[in-house]
Length: 275
Image (tube, rainbow, N blue to C red; front, side):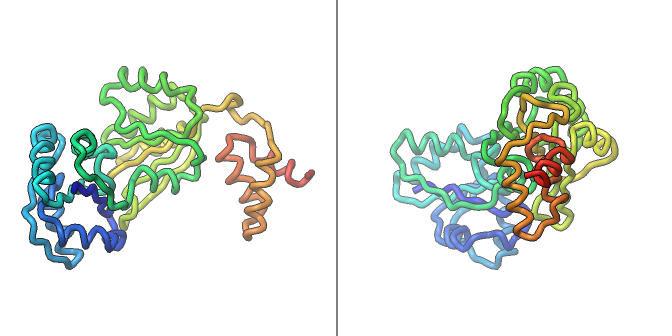
């Protein structure tokens, strides 16, 4: 069997009991970074008895068949990436695809995901979304890719290097529009976790200084009524009322729903008062 196992993003308390048990009972462990895995094992206070082999982007094509052969020979293989879920912008996809093709049993020990964590904490619409991975390194290529996404109505999640974050936000602002809402999530689940929300123009200004840590970037999808349009639907009014019933101030609830929906706060607030 092949087991793809999710590991903590930064907070060791997020390690599941299934992750610990899987590591302890594995016959072979494939790790994106063997030293980081052994460090995590030590912090979790568990003991592993299986050999640990490196399995990363540079050797995945070569090593995946070996892991499949080991599984076919009756061994249980646990594959972990540095943090989060394997195969989500991390090694593991080729192994999963090969296991499916060869008929090798494949399962997942669910764990933390930077993609879903960033989406949840962003405050942006989460009913439809896409994960776009790392943007291209060169500005021209980035802008071409963003242009293809510019009318996508789904919320988009990206990963980005802190060194390129500012330039990427500049390109997003130019292509998506300065008023497009977004959120930058930094160091998720760690001690210095930080989330910056606002328009792309505001985030461009904020990111001009030094930004450190692992970055997830969430961008609102396209709407037909950009730049503060004022179409208020009964569903939005109901959302505001639901939040107020849960204890939120009406102005705060209207502001939250308005930002998520891309409408003017004062127009939504007045619509709630008039309803």
